[in-house]
Length: 171
Image 1: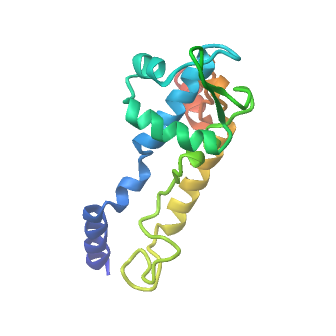
Image 2 (image 1 turned 120 degrees about the vertical axis):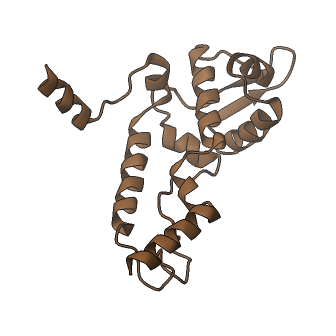
């Protein structure tokens, strides 16, 4: 049984299933761009060219992201010579999960999906660690839902309790 599980893991690795643990460029760059807008100050408009210059994100990619962010009503665009984009939601209440979901990004740590006829093991059963990956997805979602764009701009990021305990023991 372990060898068939290992073989399936290897197959999933080659299919790219394990890359799901990474947040793609779409999600990362959307958060970067929104933090950039917030860092400019409330009500300040920024063109995509300005964001491109400050963050190094391609204009084409920014156009795709901002189209989705605008449809999700997270940013608004102003036309004209002094136009650009600005946050449509206060940075203090705009959580990272909203940004990531607005650009159609899902946090997925599983190697399978609910639509798969076969479970993670290549059979109808789930792998031994299926619930572990589900719990990881849940923790990531909770973390992203707890951090606002303003937190990112000000460098106020939550520290994991485990890490804090390690530091206390070391002292």
